[in-house]
Length: 376
Image 1: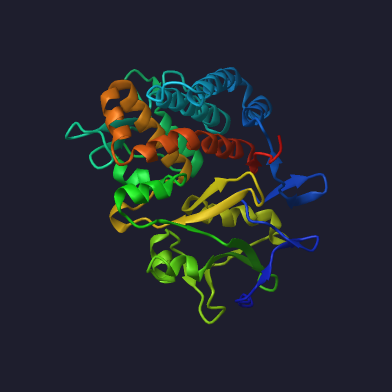
Image 2: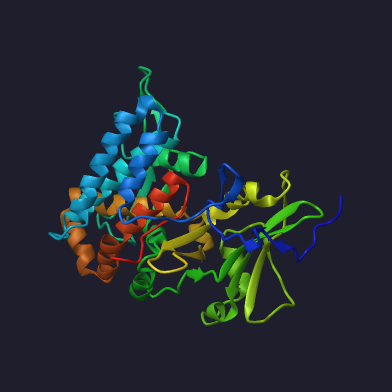
């Protein structure tokens, strides 16, 4: 077998390069084609349609009931009113949305009687980012044979393919910087350096002679150098373990390329691009935008002491749980957070993050980029 062309060629369809997406292709009456973007002012309607069309009939009633509650709590949590009560509503919106997702895409016939799967602790009873941590609980079967689902565990398993282990801990000091929206507010309050670095592009490439394909990530050298770190530093802390830094090209560009190409079986790589994406998607963060290109992707540089980072949706979910938990059980501690140096960070999360979570979850449900149209 011939060696892959190190430069490769863009993966194209009808002469046009296939855009990067977590869901790059779909089956159609004419064969496999690039997936298209779906615009929706109301992502709840998209989720409902997926449940009605794809959720197993034996689970559909429960999934739709959870979805109705998720939407109702979302409207309360994003409406005007007392900010001290909104985190509780937002968490229960996330909880019920996660149940809907797991019932539709997961293995279990019911999640009735489910628990959170997370517990907030604070050894010094402070419940701030420096002191608090979350502990995970795994789904299990009781001695009486009853299934006891833990929703964070169920969501983790469906999203990543691997469940959590009981007793795994995540310090809030590690979760807070993982939230992309408002990250610079965390930077200002903590005195730490920025950890998110924007991708200029992510590109599918292939070599037709060897029938191999791989991913290349491009960044701007200036975006990295202004923080006094090297491109190698970015690679070392990004979680992209099977990537290498290409040298000898345009010094203004930083190119990270997969070391191990993936062989494809079909005549063209389009049908199997999702296998490439699965190797990297939980190391990429994204934000949903109102304007083209409607998605912006980032690498998160996780310090070794805090590794590994949670995938983006799970970090958003975990943070929402934390704010909802202390608001419900220790509202005085939530007030302390709002008055402290991270107060703007918390307010920004409560205001801006719920809709990001909603659009990203809708995308997971429909397996397609869902974006908000930039029209009235």
